[in-house]
Image 1 (cartoon, rainbow, N blue to C red):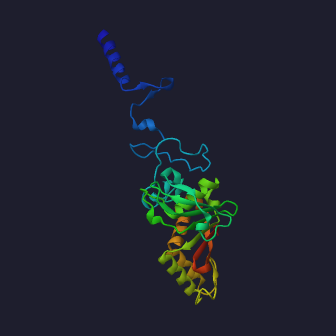
Image 2: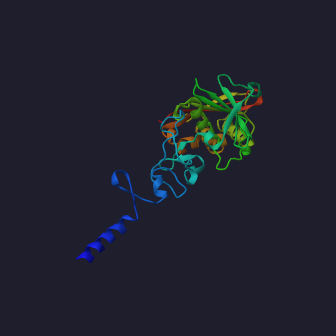
Image 3: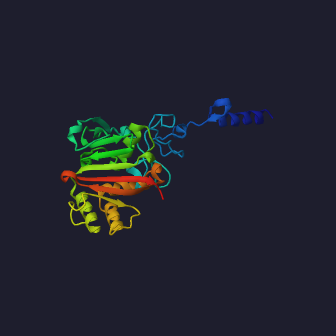
Length: 274
């Protein structure tokens, strides 16, 4: 009898040796990765999705662990989201900055607060304009090829990210993105092709043209698709609708093309999805 009692006690003691006493006597595992709970860790992905980026620094902002990046096509765009979509990224978390800029260095800028965008290596990647009143963003002379950031954010992601960061507004409130002083040959070619699709012989015939998503004018549908399949800025704008959770209920309603003083400009307008 004495031997049985002692044996049982030893077995019970050995079972307790693998755990530590936790809150209210509950056992706590000694596994390092398990102690991270819902936060990201170097040991693997957490089953708990990260909170949405909050531009105002509210309690919804991530407070622990490194930023998590989605895999696949949206991996360079932002944090893990839902399905193939991701949340808009705060560019400053990847060392992007906005510096003061002389407004005279750009052709216009009415209503825009202008800043020079720089990557974490202090490379100038273009001028970004923010118009809080009119819910508009602008990019002048974009030079994304200068961006040396690992896992860099593309221009359309930077525009949404800085819009949210600087204004404190949700990304889906952005109504217009303006590309001005366009110098990229492929962009200019697609704009000229859009003009040709609509039967416009030259810019002098119509220096400003509006191409609507649901337009029925001659060649308008073809011109619209040309700008969103062959124009890098148009392709980027379309990606904002398919890659970001905040833009899932938005659509591109129209594009306005203009060429004052020989400079190619392109305004992309957003609205509620039809």
